Length: 391
Image (cartoon, rainbow, N blue to C red; front, side, top):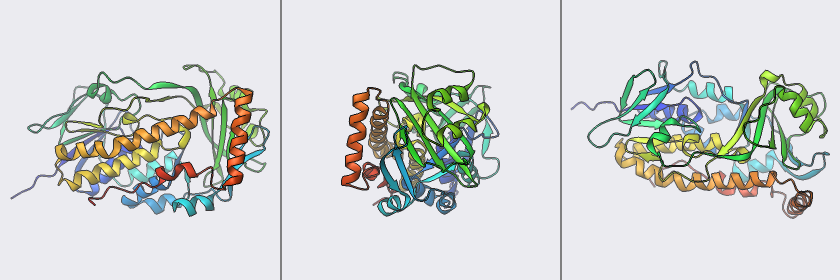
């Protein structure tokens, strides 16, 4: 008897989409990835890959390749704008506690790694505008803007925070909400003065800087303000916000050209989806659980989604309709918790009242004195993730 190869259409060639394609391809599926913009351009400047994300990459066989990109050594501190240390943690402490370092890499490096895992020709140009979730008697299908219809045993919606497929599948679900702050990111050369690795928290403003491989630095900044504002000179705006902060923050901002600065308002979903599937369609990554960047877990949760989805489907003998309810039951509570934890952390950085900020900093200093791992201890349950197994 001939067993036909199962087929999957994945919408979106982001981190989650490409990781899902790699995991399903590894399991013998025939996979197509539809992406609006080809060739794939890595959106964003840098990405943090934590121990849970690295375990996901291990299942794809590229964890050690990504570990080789780690460049953080020594302390990573939380500071005030004048440079005083509030709390410190070290790369060694992170490894002792979680088994792996926090790897900061360019998004381009991670995307290149994931692209190497899928066969040539997997990516197809296509802007998905509609989806039919299918049922027990018929395949799911995706319709693109040019009218082409792609049918498959499984459709994966990994089409980002403003996912058209999510809106089609869950039309009554509220759209992501503005978190009240905007962000800027860039990759620049290592500054001439010593790099203060970690984050600096002010009143409603944050600046972070992390070393990358090859003598580069990934920096990011955040500030409270209404949604939708765009300054004609982002670097000048950033210097007005952070130019008086401790070294080397002004130099890092000044070394980025305006075209190299990515500016995005932050949105998140305060209302989880009722399920991460409908029919033969699974929803993953930012399409499923938009979150603020404060825990650096957006890409990591997408990687978890990808490998868990493939593993649950394999456990059910590739029977998609049996597997997807289990995928929802497995992933929805976890991603909901991570979304809410990240938002709580973000809310703390948005405080603007001088008394509130003074109390926040005093409590963080006290906690750091009582326990050296205070800064990373709240990550325990997030980093404890292991890929799905039948057991």
